[in-house]
Image (cartoon, rainbow, N blue to C red):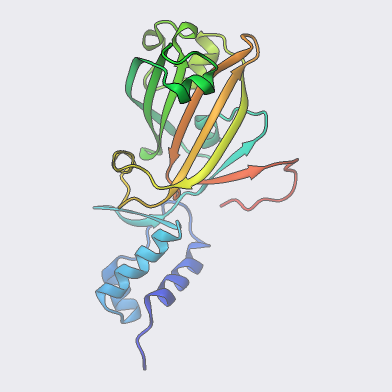
Length: 244
């Protein structure tokens, strides 16, 4: 009788995942060897296949667990708070600011924020976590004249959106968003604790302030594809949706 293939093992495990909760552990390689009578190489390949399908998250020392795949909707005219999206899904968001620095806008940033090239901007780089595990990293560019002494007013463990709206009085409105699967840089892959450099969600956005009548925040976010499921919503979304 021919040995079961790793694809068949992965398919069977994928069916089981439908009845599990995010964070539930899957069998180890050794357990799969005993359960299916396959080689250790085939057992590892099956788990890697599930990882490629973004159904599981594999962490050294913690094993293989069911991925979150939280809905990340992109809608015209709305400015979703990353932390709010995570909380509404029943999970806990936390933040870590890696750097806040002043620099001069290059041509691309200047065009996005509608400021001259060379104008001073404030750049914020941070990582975001869901239930204590790294899930995304973001870079934000803000016109420095609109956010004076930003680092004195922003709580590194708090929401950037709340700082912009609460302290600086911005009335944020999403001007546009672009999302695509892209290969991260080596540095971003390391920050997100990825295995290799698999495609992940790159979300680029521009926020406008109605009161100031100008763009006030340009951002690029890299989101782990096994944590977020980016959804493009073009019309009313009253229909049924599949949520884990």
